[in-house]
Image 1 (tube, rainbow, N blue to C red):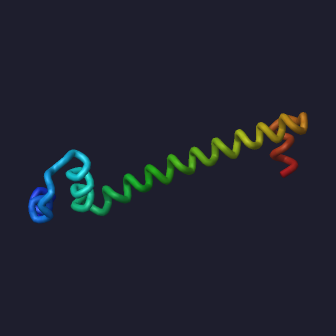
Image 2 (tube, rainbow, N blue to C red; image 1 turned 60 degrees about the vertical axis):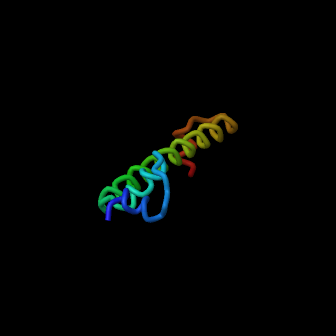
Image 3 (cartoon, helix red, strand yellow; image 1 turned 180 degrees about the horizontal axis):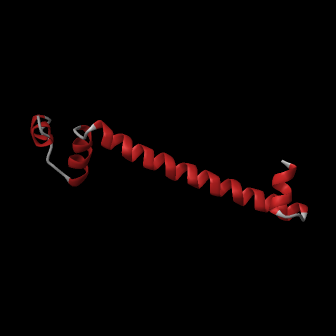
Amino acid sequence: MSHVEVMKRLHLRPSFNSVISISACFAEPGQRRKVSAEKRQQNATRRRIEELHELRRQAAELGISVDELKEAL
């Protein structure tokens, strides 16, 4: 059953968002994991950047270099 048939059975008018959402249900499992893996990578990168900013802030408060702070931790 295609996403268009699903839309007809649910008596829904196709819109861009609904077609994309229903199409995602029919996507290959590997495609969904690929998107999820990419999102996990983006989140990990964002967290790492936030951690580095926090280290820089702490180092500035203590008046030492980031390397010295890393060694102390």
